[in-house]
Image (cartoon, rainbow, N blue to C red; front, top):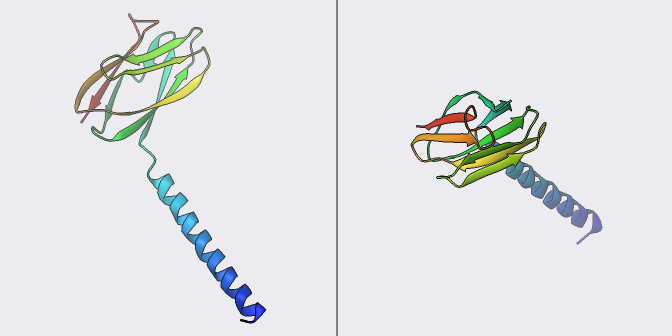
Length: 118
């Protein structure tokens, strides 16, 4: 096989392979879960109530804008995330249909978020 034909076949195989890899990354990005941002300041969640799809993975981005720590928790669903003051993190959950109360364990009186999964 002449060198130019071998080179052409190599370039074609490489180009085709990169095209498939690019398509795979696009599909992975398209499969990202729906996302909601939750801000906590002085033990108060904003928003205080969310409606989300039930039975599929969803992502909550948590921002602690308060002066103290935050413990985002739902004991029934085994979800717990602790954030220092000024920190940001996330949790990914799959909620069954119904109402789910998430709390800030460090601010029980004010730190409540009602999530309704439909």
